[in-house]
Every structure is written in structure tokens, then in C-alpha cells.
Length: 159
Image (tube, rainbow, N blue to C red; front, side, top):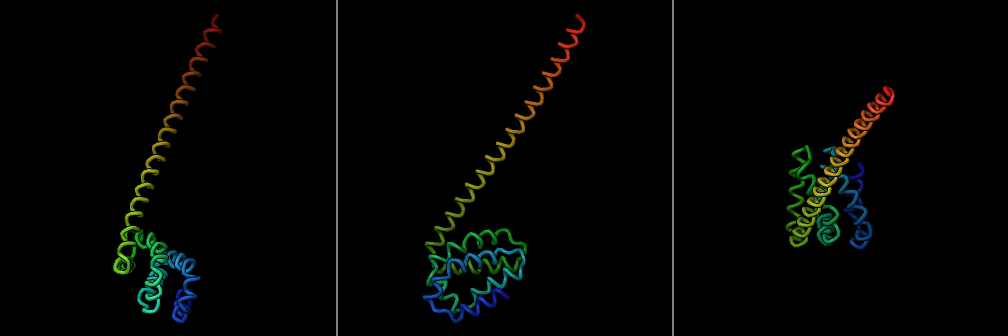
């Protein structure tokens, strides 16, 4: 319902007014597109079937594409619903045709960011492994110290 109401507003909005709301609006649209609820995602993706909304998006693609791209790219790889994936591919294709240079820059930037995230995750996993190993080493040392104390205590008692 929210998305339907927004579409009705967008159908009559002046381009000068659209510019004022495009940033916050498309951040919310990106969240809707990324929704695991396929009807929410589907309804948001249908904005790209509206000619007037598409003209507004095209006029402001330098602002809207960077907002939408990460969600669209991620969903194209991860969404459970194949209809949503197909709709996302259509939107990505539209964006690529609309501004191929920006699309290529965003693709490269997104992939580089994902590589950095994977590297950080690997480093974090390695740190946890090291921490676990330190914990095991510490426990073994404590056991060794306790064993040594017990044997010294036994030796002292014998004397």
C-alpha cells in the first residue's frame, strides 16, 4: 500500500520537487527492493515500469543509481525468488543502458568493497583462531602449573 501511494504521488510530482526527495525516497525504495518479502520487492521494482518515474530516474541517475546499485546487485545474486531476480536483472540492464560509465564504476567499486569485506572477514576469523589458540595454550600452561604445584606440595609434605 505504501509503495502504491508513493507511486501515485510520483506520477504527479514536478521534477523540481522530485529532486528534493529523491535521496531519502530511493534509500527507502532500495530497502523495499531488498525485502525478503517478494511482494514488497516486486512492487518496488514495478516503479521501473512507469514511464514518468523512469524519466525522473533517468534525469537523476547520477544520484539514484549509486543509492540503488548495492541492493540491486546483492539481490541479483542472493534473493530466493526467481521472479524478483529477473526483475532486478531488468532494472540493472536499464541502469546500464541509461548510464554505462557510472554503472561500470559502481560495479567495480562494489566488487572492490566486497573483496575488502571478505579480506576483513578472513582477518577476523584468523584473529579468533589465534585467540582460541592462546586460550588453549593458557589453559594448558595453567594445568601444567597446577600439576607442578601439586607435585611440589606432595614433595614438601613428604619431607
